Length: 376
Image (cartoon, rainbow, N blue to C red; front, top):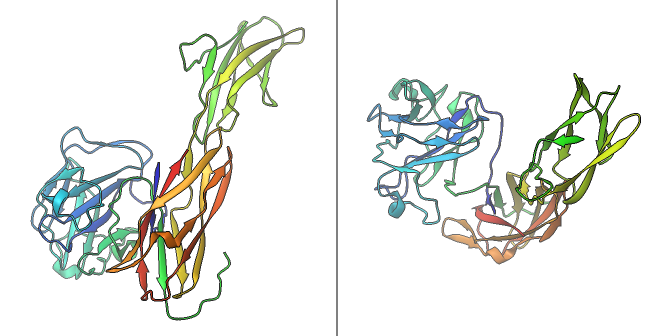
């Protein structure tokens, strides 16, 4: 199950492996509502034991517990004590770590430091002259309104360029943000033998599971004293390399190869042999779209698309669920949001249509909601 956040999210290359993704320093609920989310933009897991958040109030305002490991692409939410009951939005996820946070609402900042005390990332807001050294990068970001967060859009080591005022997005799972800007103007539509030394099960024969969205290399070994050996399947042929009387090579197992029984053919100048392989089923859908931005006037329909990639070897039925779009106390019913249910074939990237009917009485503003992708 994947979660799509409807609002604007821009993904750009990161200058840091670990970054501060968003900061809620002036929540609507002041007691227990502050939070800082960090993200691992690197390619490997990171041990965060003893890492700290430094603020104007303390060089170690919060300390990450020993044994905390953050996977590549993962997020870690540090929130004020009492977050589970005091958070502004009950739908937000629970914090990974709660500890009393002290972040000022003006001319302040927060830094992420590793266990040696080195500053890994920092973001400040307000007047640089009033902020302690080490609590911001470049020029501090502009201060945000109460209940809003500083949300990272890029990583150029310049806070004012890297962070925007936005609705906090402390939701679990993979997300897409959709923004609907409702205006009073009329808008025109926008263009839119041989041995295989791998086996994934203890059952008789060879069972192999593809890597979702990737290529798995299958290692072959053939005992033969002749001049040449090749191996082939799915129309691909590989010449094996001789190591004394043993020949070795690798065949690709692509993620979209259909599940079921398949044959690897081993060929020499005088004879052939086969290896029977069972390819196991892989069901995996990935959201390629991370942001959908729609514009419409009251009484009109906004249209866009969400791209879903099937990274498995069987078709995936994609359906959607979610909640009303909110702008302050204003709302557009979720029933007005139509996202097509669709079947995505293996190795297919499919653009799924999104349509929102904006009520005639909708006030101008930026409406947001969560859209959840369900795979069957």
